[in-house]
Length: 419
Image 1: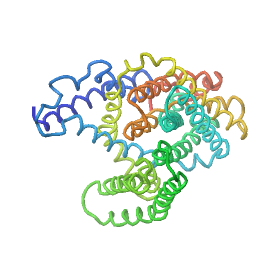
Image 2: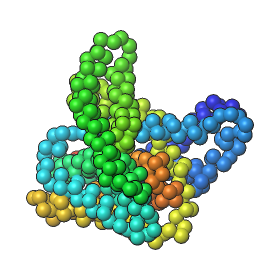
Image 3: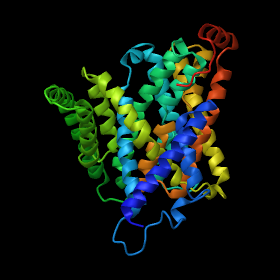
Image 4: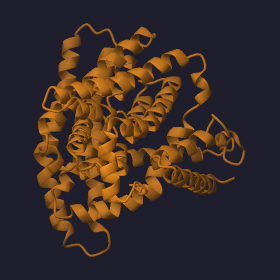
C-alpha cells in the first residue's frame, strides 16, 4: 500500500479509537485523556499491535519513512500545542488568592517526588541522569484532571479548591523549570569531563540567554504580531499567529537554550493570554487540539507502551507508584499546612495534586525522545500515570468532609456533569 494511503488509514483508525474510548471514559466519570491513552494501549504491542499487521506496516523498499514515522511527527507537534494551552489558560486571579499556601504546596510537591523518585530509581540500578529525570517526571501535576475532579465535587470555589488550583498551576511552572534544567544538564551528568564546571556554566549560560530573550522579546513581539494580524483579511488569522508564536518559541527554547521545547510553547501561551485576542484564540484552538492533535498524541503514548514489560519489574513499579502518591500528599500537604491551611485542607491539596495526566505523559515522551528513559521504564511511567489518575477522584472524595460535599451537591443539583 502507498505510504500516503497508510497515513490516511492509520490516522483515521487511531482518531476514531481514541474518541470512542475517550467518550466511554467520560461517561463513567474518568478523564477523557485516559480513554484516549487506553485506545493506544489496546492497539499497541500490549494487545492488538496494529504496527505488526501487514495492512499498517510499511512495505520493504518503498524508499519512504512509513506511516508510523509520519504519525509520530504529528504527535510531537501535538505536544507543543498541548503545552501551549495551559499557558494560555493560566488564571492569574487564582494565583493571587491563597498565594503563600499554593506556592509552598507546589514547591513541596516538586521537591519531595524529585528527591525520593531519584533516590529510589538510582537504588534500583538506573544511572543518575536517568534516575533524576524519572524523579522529574514524578513532579508533574495535571491541572486539567485536578480541575475536573473539583468540578465533579463542586468544590472549585472553596478555599481548598483555590489553594489546589493555584498550587497545580505553580507546579506546572516549577516542573517545567526543573524539566528544562535536567534536559539541558543531562549530557554533563552522564559524562566524565575534565572541566565539568565549565560545561555546567555553558549550559546554564545558554538557558539564561534563551529565557532572557524570551521574556525580553516575547511579550512585545507577541503584541506586535497580533496588532498586525488585526489588519489581515481571512479567517482564523489570530489562531495562526498564536500557533506561529508557540512553534517559534518552542524551537528557540530547544535549539538555543537546550531546554525542552514545551517550555517555550508554555511561555508563548502566557504571552498570548495577555493580548485582547486571548479568548478568541482559546475558543478556536480547543477544537483543533481535542479533535486531532490531542488524540493523536495520547494514542501515540499508548502505542509506545508494552505493558508486558512490567513483568519482572513489579516491585520497582509498586515502590515508584507509592513514591508518586506519597510524594505529592506529603510534600504538597506540608507546604500548605505550614502556610495557613488547616490539616483537612492540606490533605485535600496533597491528594488533589496526585494526578499526572497529560503533563506527566508529555514529560515522559520528552525523556524517551532524549534517551533519558528506556522503553521499559517509559512503559512503567505510562502505567503509573494511569494508576495515579484513576485513584485520585475516589481519594479526593474521601478527603473532603461529607457534610461539605452534601451541601454542595444539594446546592448544585448533583455531580452528573463532566468537565
